[in-house]
Amino acid sequence: MKILACNSNRPLAEAVSAYLNQPLTKASVRRFSDMEVFVEIEENVRGKDVFVIQSTSYPANDNLMELLVTLDALRRGSAQRITAVLPYFGYARQDRKSGPRTPISAKLVANLITVAGADRVLTIDLHAGQIQGFFDIPLDNLYGAPVFTKDIVERFGSDPITIVSPDVGGVVRARAIAKRIDADLAIIDKRRERAGVSEVMHIIGDIEDRCCILVDDIVDSAGTLCNAAVALKDAGAKSVAAYVTHGVLSGGAVARISSSPLETLVITDSIKATEAVRVAQNIEQLSIAPLVAEAIQRISEERSVSSLFD
Image 1 (cartoon, rainbow, N blue to C red):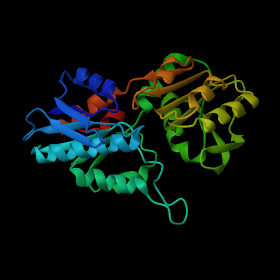
Image 2 (image 1 turned 180 degrees about the horizontal axis):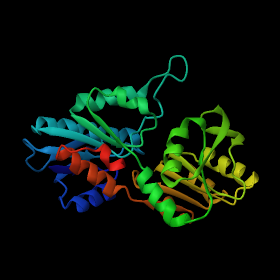
Image 3 (image 1 turned 30 degrees about the horizontal axis):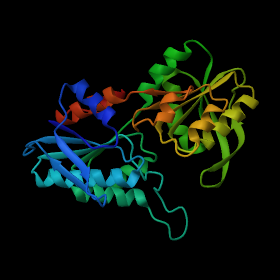
């Protein structure tokens, strides 16, 4: 087995490497003067089972190209099997035609990864389950729920908890966590007027005098989360926290969260934290390195990955 890291999230790759006691493969992923990506694998990978760790987060296009060129380099280096490990799968929100003459970019990216040389894909909390069907190669979709539930139990103890889905589309994800900790479930019904702007309409479920925990897969502009937090507090919630797998946190998201009623936003390290995220008082990171490392080990040894979540 070989583990190779591109440049998008070196800290996570190093944590996975340390967990498995497997040094990162020596490779040079750099730019020419015109910003073309150049990759050189500096170790023999012929006949090896290689795992490439690369989140396609900001800058999404640069990181995607790094991944594609690296996959091609490994394929031409005669690696036996290449697994693209994408802790955060970019372009996942473009998973269907949202209007006339719009792309399904998630399918395009799936095609690119496959053609570039990946034999399988490992990712975490895909935005939409149907994206698994966009790939013609095996895909393992891990869940952040075990990491979150452990922290929720330790943090909130015996307090009355209600798990809240910020929209109807996230009910399955929220229900899975609520079931794990035997908590109540609530849903926020919202109307989105345009991309990036949401208006909370009403809350389905009992949240008065309860610790409300919002659960989602991606927080980008944080408008939805902050609006939901305000609505929950206005409806009588005792406290509001949020657990989100992928902290994209673009634009003024960190400032928006800092001034919101959210007591804590817990994200994973699927995306490398910016300086603004690291210094924010009410944003915390949990590591998914053990989860990713365990999945990599099981894939390499041809063992069950789904049993991780039993």
